[in-house]
Amino acid sequence: PDLDADIVSLGFVQNLQIDDSGVVSIDLCLTTPACPIKDLFVQQCQDIINGLEFTRGAQVTLTAQQNEAPTAAPLGMSQIGAVIAVSSCKGGVGKSTTAVNLAFALEGMGAKVGIFDADVYGPSLPTMVAVEDDNVRFVGRQIAPLKRGGVSLMSFGYVNEGSAVMRGPMVTQLLDQFLSLTNWGPLDYLILDMPPGTGDIQLTLSQRLNITAAVIVTTPQELSFVDVERGVEMFDTVNVPCIAVVENMAYFEKEKSANVEVDYETLRDKFLQVLNERDDIADEAAADVVNSLIDTVQENVQNAGKGEMEEIRIFGQGHKRRLSEQWGIEHTFSVPLVSTIAKNGDSGTPFILDNPSSPQAETYKELAKTVARETSKVLFSKTSRPNLNYLSEEHVIQVDGMDQGTLAPAELRRECRCAACVEELTGKQILNPESIPESIRPMSMSPTGNYAVSVDWSDGHKSLYPYRQIRSMLASKNPNDEVLNGNMEKEKETVQL
Image (tube, rainbow, N blue to C red; front, side):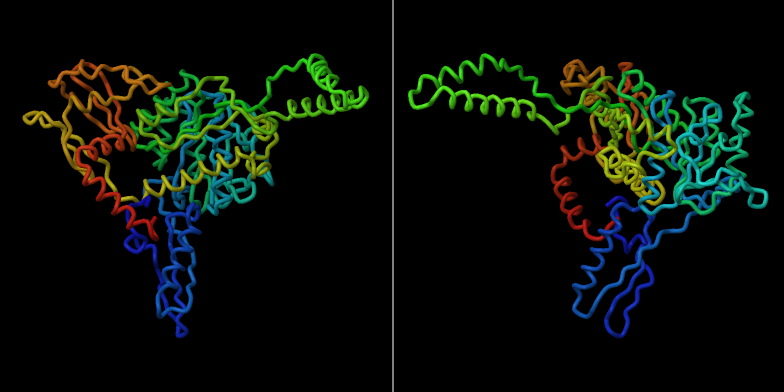
């Protein structure tokens, strides 16, 4: 489903053979060895082959497509399939923690992964990941990356323990040399731990490395949301899609407390009063019964809510809804404040390795699955984004591409979901639809990232519309098309990528 085509049309099914006994063998060449649904593909292929009358078994071998770096890639990066930038516009939000745990999660899914720490002024990788051998070795005229398990590592901090006292152009040149001279070998993913900010170093790295996609790291505060917007805009400038946002320190988890206050002395007196009114219960027996009742009440109060966790959002509710409604970024992940994540970052062992079954590790694994799927879409999908054009004579917005149709400018303007038009927490519309005249028109329209379009309106307002919102508006005007598309999607569910 990710690439909107079946695996045969995509050329994933290779080396089809049938032996004399009727056993069918195929190679299934996927876009990445970290494909999150590869086991499902194998099962579906086996079920389909075994369902044929003339077959007597199925053997499915998984392979992955060879990495092909762009021709302009630096020498040491010629065998890297995808470069994933992990970025933030502000320091101290947990960007390096996210980069490290993402890399080891992808490695755990079967991919060959490397991490490059691009922060020369404050390298974090040497502290966060203790290597097996810290001696820097050369392969010919290139540097061999250091290793931790199956993950390749390189950082300025591994080769220079002192401070980097240098100006921006020198840093850019140093990073360029590092990337060119590091002999990464064949990698499915190179995780680029970007320095914070949106300046010259970040732009140069984005242009020089042909970054495939970006993951933005932030925190729940309003100021951090502004930084997310800057990050998305920076990557959009160099045509790099932002495929996910990680919200660190999203909440603090604590065990629920019952918050029940009981006056046990008064309760004891009431119990005794009731029991003493009965002639068939001796005073001694009544006292024993009351003590047992009080013990039971205390135990129940203490156990009320025990084991259940509640989320306390210290820094606010976060911005998942705005990211989805305004920017079309649907893949957002919340990581709570957990002391063990910080401790692991200081100890040299990634959190996901020490705590593979924890809920937070599952979040990093889900992030890795998203990165694998969205990267495959960027590299292999032939689906084009909708094109929006304003036809002034007809006074309509023409939508071309896989989704075709027209929208009235006023209709689109009234559906703006920005903070000035819709209340963030409740979703209640602030904008009065009647205040938008039918004569309103778009002054300019341009894609923003991979998932949204930006529109400058004649009333001076600027809106962002996720493509899925535009598709939904077109579908509501053509309900028959929506039903037809739904039926087609059901037919395509079997053995697709």
